[in-house]
Length: 186
Image (cartoon, rainbow, N blue to C red; front, top):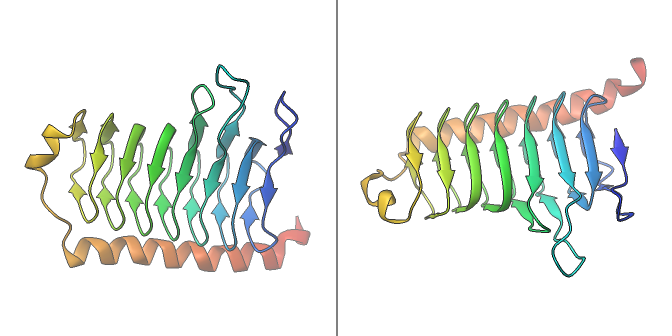
């Protein structure tokens, strides 16, 4: 469902993107080309800052927002999801937040008020809050990171782990094409 926010902003979805009919996109949301947005995802840009403005939520080209993901912004802050990134099932990305290109965010993970650098992997059930994750970092499952100082204990991403992220992005790119092909059959 595509709908306006109370400020009158309406999502802009590139014609090559696929948004599942059960997903909700509300407000100042920009979905770039070849994006997959799965069932029951909620992407909502509707809170204003104290000056009455808001930054958009941007989903970069070739990225996938999987089933049950929630993306929202606090007090007009923005969220940017880079190109060919994967936000896995039931994750929460709460702005202000920036996720770089070729990033994998695992199942049930939470990102808040943070930045995740290009090529990083945040595995399942992790929490990343109030810090800047440099490019190429691997955050293990169930890890909680709440400051830049805690990042010193995190190991860099290995080639095997980035390969997993790339395979997820490619699989979801194929889903965009497949679902767009059959969308009128429902």
